[in-house]
Image (cartoon, rainbow over all chains, first blue to last red; front, top):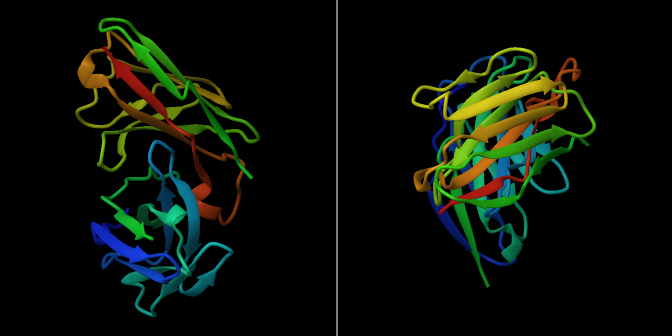
Length: 111
Length: 121
């Protein structure tokens, strides 16, 4: 899996939009970008996945520039319950690759 | 969607005893399951890959004789921590991959269990 780099921690306030950027300079042609969310004492939960341009679901948006060397997870109007660790993962989805987690971004939402 | 059930959610055991953790895929078959360990404030660390009907593959530095993995069916993998010691206290998480998910797999087809908090006293 391509190595990823993301901020260790971020703080924001309720109601704000939060953008977490992940760098993956060595992304391969058939790699997808996937973001997971983990709350304390819980397993990671899938948030969103994309290959290029923009993907949006009911939870978040994922912006991927043309060179795909980075991606940005956008959480609209965050609430206290969005406080969690967010992991950016890059890899091929059509292979049986194991998922190696990076350090993730610890997001802390303040009232 | 795919659901992975992990039990128990927490367990306390005495030093020297063994503890078994179960990971079940409830609505799909999983030829491959993964076991992770997570210490406080740290990321998930992959321990081993569990393969149905064959021996597990352990990551470097993980003692295979201490962390016994059995994947006897397409819906169940177990992790047994043998002769547990306080340093084995951690949060253990499994993930399973839908083996029948063909073509483009959403989120790699991986779903994670809710984790097991092991405390060895």
